[in-house]
Amino acid sequence: MTHTATGYWLLLLVLCMGIPSLHAQETVLKFPKKSKPIHIAQHKPKGQLPRGFEPSGLTWHPRLKKLVMVGDDGETATMNIDGSSFQNKPFRVNVKTDFEAVTIADPKTDFVYIGTERPNTLIEYNIVTQEYTRQFKLGHILPHAGNEGIEAVAFVPDVNDPEGGLFYIGYQKTGSIYRVRLPIKSSSTATDSTYLDHFTPLPEHTDLAGLTWDHANNRLLALWDKPNILVALTRDGKIIKQWHKVRGANQEGIVMIDGDLYIAEDSGDLYKYPKFESSK
Image 1 (spheres, rainbow, N blue to C red):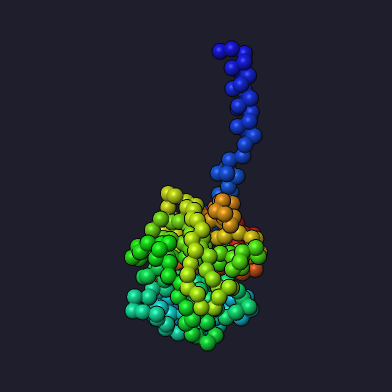
Image 2 (cartoon, rainbow, N blue to C red; image 1 turned 90 degrees about the vertical axis):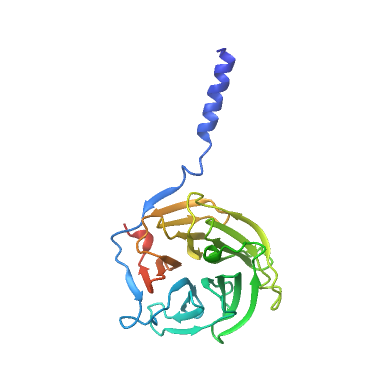
């Protein structure tokens, strides 16, 4: 090998060593064990949830100071942050409606957006008046997948977006997250939807079960049920941090409030993990 060739390969090696790897920058942690969860809600007679209510989505309305849950059988529920003042109401758009996820877009309003997978839609619903207002059909973006369609949704605010932000929709069949724009600010009646793009954070896993936007830390949190993995992502899908061996089973909903992590399980349980990231 000539000196010129040797110098070329040495230069290439130095340059490659100087390029950071996205995967190398990830922090992989075990889910905290010492933090004993607080059992916020469970089925009657021990708790306040009606028998048969299966929590499948969870969010927090900061202005109303209410946790909002949805259930597989077309039910919505609200409660205080400590689980008190529980109220629920059955609600159906059609006989096949299967509520799987819920999010808040604008806390100034009383609207929540409920994800259903049969068919794949987002429903705009007023949790104060308990009235359905409109339905955004997403079948042209997310193909029908039976029980493996929409499983998670989070609204990610963006002051530069014409609608105030984008909906990040978790598709269980592939584990992908779709970014979709809905006319929630420009219109009170339009029901069209615009696909922007999608990404798959963990290609080796499907079963994406929960999404939430962590406002305090400006990041997206995504929860995978079967592998029990929690992932923190940037808004464009880059992995920041992972927690493995998430506690519990059949985790379906997730939200972060003032550093406390809340996880809803479809067995009928809601747990709070206080000061999640400061625990070991």
